[in-house]
Length: 226
Image (cartoon, rainbow, N blue to C red; front, top):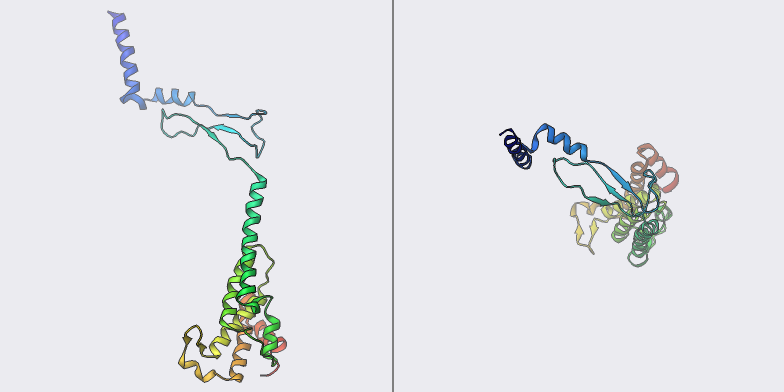
């Protein structure tokens, strides 16, 4: 009778483990005691070597008791492929920036400060302050910095400010259907020159957070007439 009871208890315990008593404290301790961490390598079993290729990790980060443990293949560290991907992205960005300057707005190449100085001193070169030059200057600077080029802040900001001021001084652009009638009073050479001087000063002030420095730049470096 006792043996029958013992056998019945054993069977009852097994069914309870599979069913409703899965979260029993004894079973939880038993499951967690059976979980282990193993790190194996094809060549050696030294687990702390970094950047090993084809390493297999068996982890024990299991939140639910009774879950299956699977081996996880770690990522292969391929330095050559990573370098090719990095260099390819940079080359693509650089080619895009160069193509914009070569085919859309050649006047946007370079820093832009010599062009602004030339205009403020009486030389009206073609398209140095055109809307297309403004667009290429902004987008090309972004692409150049993204490609890893050493692109300074002063030149692009001065040229961008001068282009915006020139666009306002002309009352907009008829080619791109951007016209504002209230700016027609500034559509003369003198007011346009003054606005471009202010735009160049604003570019320096924005680049270095120095309003006084922008004014001094416009007075000492850029303009010759006031």
